[in-house]
Every structure is written in structure tokens, then in C-alpha cells.
Image 1 (cartoon, rainbow, N blue to C red):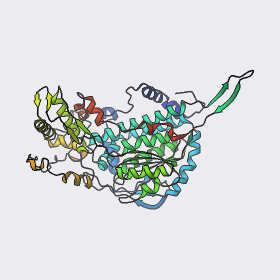
Image 2 (image 1 turned 30 degrees about the horizontal axis):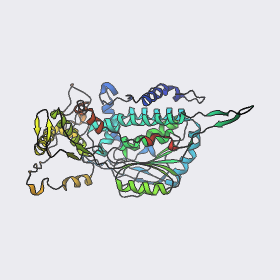
Image 3 (image 1 turned 180 degrees about the vertical axis):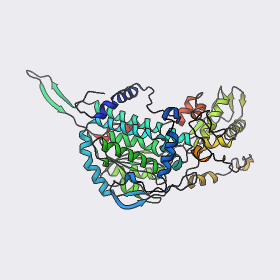
Image 4 (image 1 turned 45 degrees about the vertical axis):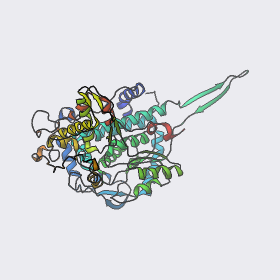
Length: 497
């Protein structure tokens, strides 16, 4: 990181981290600051229970950590866990105009702090979020329906690494242009000289619109890219997945205040189901940047209307992912990875495959030539075996996130149609019995961090098991973990040069 005259206690604290991450970014090499295992050996012996206790304290109550935001005086909240319980968290409704005024008032001091200080403060925010990863895992699990280990990893450390990557990418863009330079053009006699000074100028308020399935993983790049480049951020969570981003915003505001900045630089704009707040915020004149993850309908509207209003709009919408099978020298591994990819989080990831194409002439494998029908039977069998054990399957499938998803799943017509191909019978779900209250993270899941020391339900995946099927086929791992982050989310377009 370049030398700077700007000083701040957090600058020295995080200088090494930012330099290491920046080097990895330039070299395109591996770097991860935040451990992905929820094991107590990593996060502390009491971390799992502390996280669960903190989560339970937040339920059925007003979310006091955001009480200092500009508010209408009303409370909103309609979250219901895909696993069943109503969360009952009530959030202060944001007074939009007052919040925008507060954000714009906070922007000059944040801008003048400089890119390095902003990056250091943002890194402190991410570190502080990481310290609450077990609590975040419960919040993500009970708003998205992800299984616990996936909620911990994707909603916690993986999302946090994405946040740090956005911070470092923003820092690199801002510091590659010198603050001041003397420009010279040779001429007869004295050269023509010009003093050029450059200033990073933020665009304005950034709006981040979150999604239901991956509330932190998809929101963090936009939040931290905008914040690191000097733009205040208003976070509009999905009505059914507010709690993870409420935790995020509360932590960010706490750190900003401690670091000497206005907490209004990050604000939460929650609403209940059926509202139009996202649209209202997107059209607000103070909003200059919009980051959106969600369905293609509203995404297309944002792209059209945002462009008309001169806003920068970045969208990640629904994907259609296909797999083409030509041949394989490891049929068992290929089927295992496809079974995993189809099953993980019940296929609700934007990277989940929807269609598998095989040649009409069949597939050559290390177990001989398979015609298309036989390959289909083998794949169906692999999925059935992979999900046959209920205690193991629940830790992979998780829960369907909402009634819309469940409706689409049950409305699928029987495959084969008039061809008479057999459709596998629909079996009633058999959820594993719950463990004793003190040992379970959610019904049917054990104390995920205790390895062989007991407390795990037989068959429950231990930390790291979710990633094992990827080892033989890194391409599938890349597909499942494809971050969907576009370089433009991190580039200098968030700035006026």
C-alpha cells in the first residue's frame, strides 16, 4: 500500500492485511483471511453456543441496535424461518428523506479521510462481522433456509472474503492515480509545465438491494465497494431476509462511530412483504449507484429506469445453467459431483444446474459406453443415494426458501410424458429427530464444531464434508462457488475522476 500522510489507528492495524490481499489480487493468487470451518478450535470453544444464544436473544423483540437511525417511529418485520418458526424481529422503519440527508452530510468527512483510511475502517468492519460468524450463520439459516454449515461458510467467511476483496480492489483503483504530478511538455527554452492535482470524488448514496437466498454473500461486494470509494450506503434487504443485513449494518455503524465517522454512512431500510420501498429508493435523487441481486423482472426495470436517471446500475439476476456431458474417465466422480450440485441447498443457488445434455449416441465412460437413457438412470440413482440418509440429506438440502419455490417444485410435470418413462415416487419427508436443546443448532443438526467428541447426530455432515465431493472435479467446485461478481462492481466507475 502506498505511503500516505493520512493517519488513523486502524491504518497500521490493517496495513499488512491490505498489502497481502492487494498482492493476491494483482497476482490472481489464493488468499483468504477468514477461516471457513465453524469448529470451536478455530473460533473459540464457546463460539457456537455464544452465537446461538445471541441469535435467540434477537428473536421476538425490537432490533435496538438500529434505534439511532432516522425513523418514522413505526416498526416493520415479517420474517419467518423456512424451517418453521416466526422470527418476530421488529426493525425501525427508515425515514428515507432524513436518512438521505444524514448520509450526504456524512460523506465529506468520509471522502476527505482518504482511500487508505477508508479501506482500513472497512477491514475493521469485516473483522468485527467475522467475530460474530456463528450468530450470522443462524440468521442466514433461518432467513434463507440454507443448512447450517453452508450458512456459516457462505453467509460468513466466504461473504467476508468477498467484502475484503471489494475493499482491496477499490483501494487499488483509487491509489493507482497519483494525488499530484507535474506534467511537462518539451519546448524551445523552458518546457511547458502544468501542476495536476487529482481528487477522488464519490458519486453519492449507493443503494444495495439484497436477495432472499444469499443475503450477505450477494450484498457484501456492493456494500463494501461503495463504502470504500467514499459513497454512503443504504442497504435494502429482502423482506424475508432482513436479520443478516441488520447485523451487518449495526456492526458497520458501531465501527464507524468508534473510528470517528458518522454512522449514517451505512443505514438499513427494512420493510415487510408487499412493499415498494426498493423502487422508491431507486428513484430517490440522492441515490447514484444501485447494486441489485434478485429476479429478472425488477432487475430489468432497474436497468432501464436507473439508466434514464443517470444512475450506475449493477444487477445479478437469475441464471440458467446447463451441463453438457460428452465423455468421462471417472463416471463415479462425475455422477457424485452432479448429484451434489443438483442437491446442494435444494438447487436454489443461482449456480445450480438445471439441465443436463448428453449426445443422442450416448456417453463414453471408464465403465463402458452408456446410452442416454442409461446415463439418466445412473444420474437419478446417484442423486437418490446421495440423499437417501435423512440426517445427511438435511445438511445438504436445507429448506426451500419460500412458498414460491415450493410451488414451482411441485408444479413440474412428470418427465417423459407420453413416453411412459417412470417418475420416481414422491416420498414423505422424514426429518431426523431433534437433539437435546443445548446441543442442536437447528432441528436435526448437531453441534457442528465438535468433531468426534460427541454431540453430533449420526450422519450429520461435519465441518468440511460439504466441500469433499469437489476435490476430484475442481471445475464443479468453481461452478458451485462461482461468485458472480462482475469486475465492474469494484472498478473506478463508482468515482468521478
